[in-house]
Image (tube, rainbow, N blue to C red; front, side, top):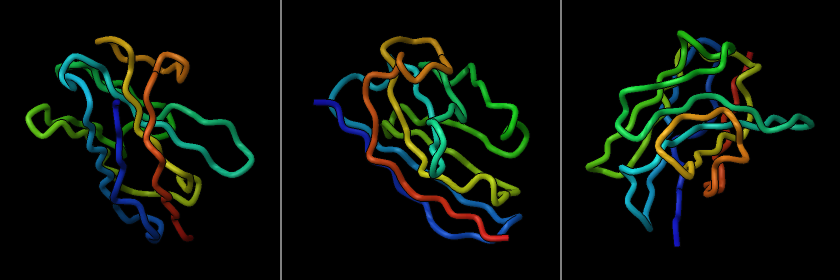
Length: 124
């Protein structure tokens, strides 16, 4: 049973920073790509950032490029999302997800396991 647990969400003012964490368990973490997605009220879930199995390849949505950084610590079986220069439009529930393979993807249907989500609210 694969489990992913996000933490680190909260309320922050525009321009501030948050660091999300996602702890995993249940299978060999280092063999799989990981991703962060988000869903705002009334909107579809969207890709935020992804990282391949080794951490050597990352991908970001244009809306967060240069502000967010995804990383992973395979020894701690955890991934992170450092979010800087936050904007009100970043407000959403953020989900981490584990892919079915080694390669980063922006397609949510290629991620088989999801966390429960953590709320990020950015006030103006």
